[in-house]
Length: 273
Length: 110
View (cartoon, rainbow over the protein chains, first blue to last red):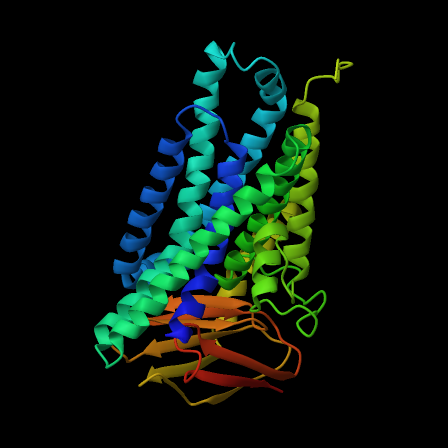
């Protein structure tokens, strides 16, 4: 049971943290429950579909289907996160300033919410398909102790959900005037990490071959497969043995989104507070 | 003008030839009863190659290795191949992420 719990929890961590961040970012926004819920539902449905068609997906594009699919949805998430950050930088401040006067902002804000819903869906889809396959494998093998394993899997899911809650309350405990800066930074790191993960899949597909050497190896200090390593991976894109290409894309994405967000922000006005 | 065109052609063909060349060397593995066979495989150092894994079990597997930087789901009865970068000599551990306790193996690069 413990084994199943750990495996499922490990997979759910990423989605759990991302959902927590999105909930904090969208706090107080009208109808955000529907967006986040919709993202979750779409992600779960997608995960089940990916699990069912895993074989067909693997065989697509002369065997590179899985890699291209993963790279594609990661790239989509990166674009959505970057876009959300830029949008928030250009509108967020005004919205926060006069929350009552949000006639146009709601319509535009819903686009930004859609972007975040897509990010939730992608996170759930990626990790969820592995959970589905793993739990299905348990169910299919029909061995004794099946109930125990299933219970472990469900507990792992619940723990992942608890992590969302923790992330959410951790973030909303931050005073409102800093929260925006913190979530903007978090989303930038999140996006850069996903961009670098995207490169790994392109390398695995043989599409990216440049700078494939290992840049450093910190697996003895903070291994990828430890819980702390997983969390650092989700939040900051940490990997213990990155390739040069991964690091390059990471820093380019980080700098690119940071600069774009800065440029989009309206000129700083002296604030009354 | 012509030289430029020829060199562009060569560059282009190199671009497409590279993955094809890399496919020449390949390491084959099978998974049965949640065990890799063989559990230890060898590959030459400093040249790209592919790892081909066939899953003979009735449950899905996920071939994964941190040091090789790969992770790929293999459907029951399915076969996948992965591109591996040129590696330094050494030992590289791989495992089935869904059955880590029983399904692991090592790649010896020399």
